Image 1 (spheres, rainbow, N blue to C red):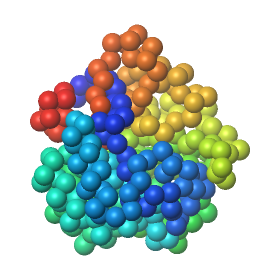
Image 2: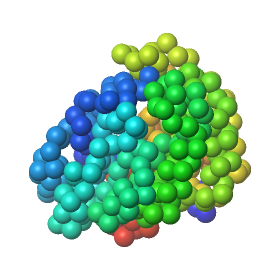
Image 3: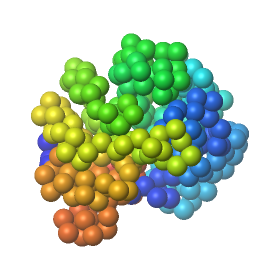
Image 4: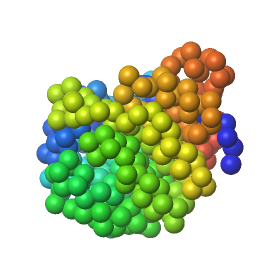
Amino acid sequence: MSREILVFMPSKKFPSISITGNKCWLMCNYCMGRFLKGMDHVYTPKQLYDLARYYAKKGAHGLLISGGFTREGYLPIQPYLDTIREIKKNFGLIINVHPGLIDKELAVKLRNAGVDIVDYELVLDNRIIRDIKHLNKTIEDYIRTYETLAREGPPYIAPHIMIGAKYGGIDWEYTAIDLLRDYNPYLVVFLLIIPARGTLFVNVSIPKINQVIDVLKYARRKLNTELSMGCMRPSPVKNSLDEILIENKLVNRIVNPHPLLIKKYGLKIIETCCSVPRKILVEKGLL
């Protein structure tokens, strides 16, 4: 596996779109709909199609389709599937979806609609699931959904592990890494909890940098796959953390590092979501 580090800067070449606007029924403690505000908002399939056409004309490479989750923990994407199929057929955009906990039927429908990638937040701690995500679900539900997606869903499933989601503590992240050894995903994306204003996590302590590094070192030892540091990490530690990750080649991909780090290490920039697999990057002439 190449140890080259790629920088991903999605910007308007790979916009994030919420199909529920600012609305989220789940209201996880660390987000509470706050992170939806920075996305483009659509409320109907036609609006999604028109926005996709606009971005395609502007030279976009793809779309991340996300939004608020229902009380059952899934994105209400069913009414948009025919439109996604038309977007894929007419514009050839890379389609990445953040669907949440879904069943076999919807996994198959996502694949048949032409979705390329699923970003899947893997959570293996019942306290997080119950008290922080407000779901009447269990670890087994998260594993079952991941298995269903891997077996029946779109071609590329990118598990995401949010470091520090348990009120800033770290423990279950190692269990998630161990689990993923058995599935050999093409990529694992790590995020770091942000104590965002306007959320119940505003006063949560950010994990220490050395704790985060230990998780990434463990993942590097245990997983024979690409690792990415995704877009979610708090500004007080971002630059220091990023330089350690880059200097020690603990990740293969990193999203939006400081421009000085890009220049210092001579890193290649790709204007897509970091979940886009190498095969598609090569096919699109981006790598």
